[in-house]
Length: 427
Ligand code: ZN
Image (cartoon, rainbow, N blue to C red; front, side):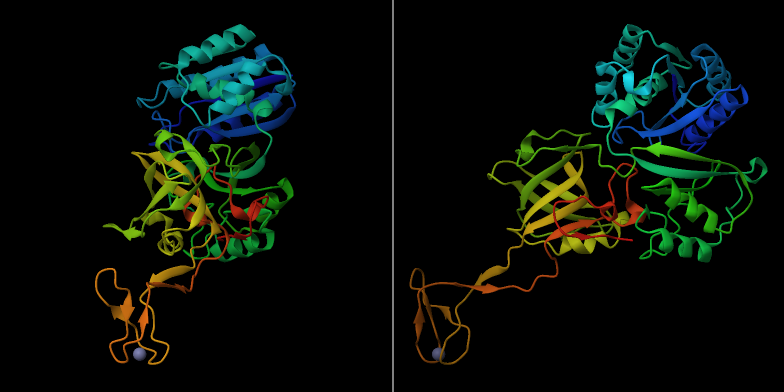
């Protein structure tokens, strides 16, 4: 078996092209007599600085001879390096082994690639030690992602699929012609096996990109049957080619589950799942961004968690938090702020303290003076101190998430299930 890993560190200007490149390489492998067993679309650490829109790398598993497959990939990658875009730095890694049989160190490299920052030297040393063929253009930074894609099949356990349809070449750059009524209908029928196809709250066709580029739409889900059924149900402009990718999208592979760890130990560019406490009132700032302070369970360490404007209705959930709520939050830390992707209510603070009410007059009592307790102004009845009363809460226990229109590629939608509490999915 041969594993071909490619990453062109997709340029922003040209849109998301790496999957197109992989689809073409796979077709040429088939034309050369090879069988393509699967195509992988691997999302890497979304926080990586040399970032592309989606930070994706691709792998193709085939029975074609490794040298022959490498030659095909080289022919497809070479022209990309000629593009005058400093962000394009293609890389190729070809392994002459079963995808399940890559060395431990390379599987670890792949697992870390969604959570850490790798440098090129480490990638090349590992590939050399394993005897893999590598090739780079314009600096070849894509070899980091390419090696991660080669190790991915061993590194990840949770897999989803994406069915991508590509536009005819002469239509690229023109508005995409996708009939929304059939799209929304097909999406509803396949939900929740296919997810993030549309956003009902925003009335948006999430699966249809806005950026220029060759993709007409990408349907994500748990099974090939579900995503294919959606694609078949859509009336749209003619499609040039289609491809099914096995992906780590929608799996939360980027999150480190750190339990009740001290928030002060968190680092920028890493994503966490942490149990903590709401430490203050949520605040809506200029631009509609909502910030809420969170504190470690043991009282150490405090930081802000944020739901930015593009997260839309999710901000109402964050605004509904109250100090004292016990929560689990998930998101990436950037500039010392945790950007919320989802959170779970573990225990709601359902009480607040207030002045006591006079049992005879049914009126709120006033302070009787410093350290003197409370007294009714009308009848003189006294009470020793403030009392707790129950507060109505909009939130319920369980998980809340950003809507599909704001979902990061790698973040797991609640609709996929497997969460440790009730879910309140957005769709
Ligand atoms: Zn009274």
